[in-house]
Image 1 (cartoon, one colour):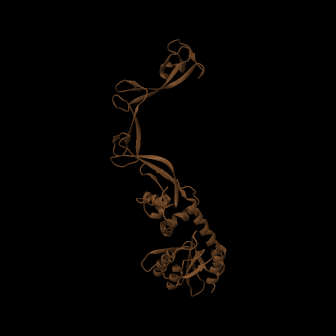
Image 2 (tube, rainbow, N blue to C red):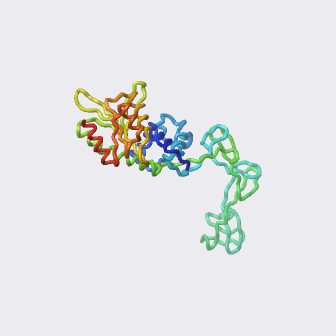
Image 3 (cartoon, rainbow, N blue to C red):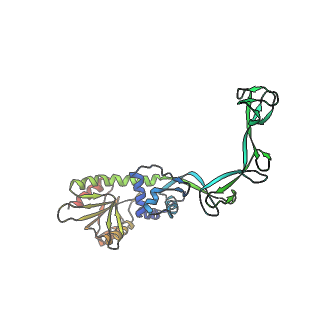
Length: 326
């Protein structure tokens, strides 16, 4: 599987639509997102379509998350599309290899074990019983009296017989006949979070849940994820938004960022500033685990973002609580 750089992966995690999809995986607990089939539309992913607002970019979006290391995928099915009109509403015609018609009759071949006579099953039928046309003995016990020896086809148009028909596809929409050579033949996948993405999600929930409980005990109205409308008309998402009680309400926006390295990149500060510059919350807090880079600290001070650093989850949560109650 292609692997994105840490910077590219970080940018994916900051994408609003990616965050919504990850939240769906966690809150709705699909575990594995399987496609839904419709004969008119083919396979679709309604959960992703709802997030994107339409379906034309769904495959591209999922491909980006797979290549970026956010999603794993497994082959779920294959689908055939018409090369003329791109419809997935396709049937299979088993055709005569001689005259190409699909007016073909399929029969089972029956072998009378004792006398060795082989013929199609309909030739053995006699008043609802199986009777050998050669020796006239009734056949009652499968695998003792007789075997099914395969299949045999007869063309109702040219009357020729054969054992293997030629498969062709037929589009029910534009009525085009086409072979496998011309078919559009595509993979269809089921998707799940990668272990790395699941770890990020679990860490995020481990951070947000105790903070939510703490804020609600203080009387704040809390949303996670929280959304604030910007002056530009853009709707910005934060890990948490908290609105204080009382007549003079104030809004606090909180983001969490972690790194497996020794320091967190300043990119997280830049990303948060872009949101708060437009959304203008009363207070902005950025929690960095284990610590922020030196450039990040300078930027946080410049942008008036309250930076909370902690070596682990517990120390970070306690530092954030102290910051909020100041």
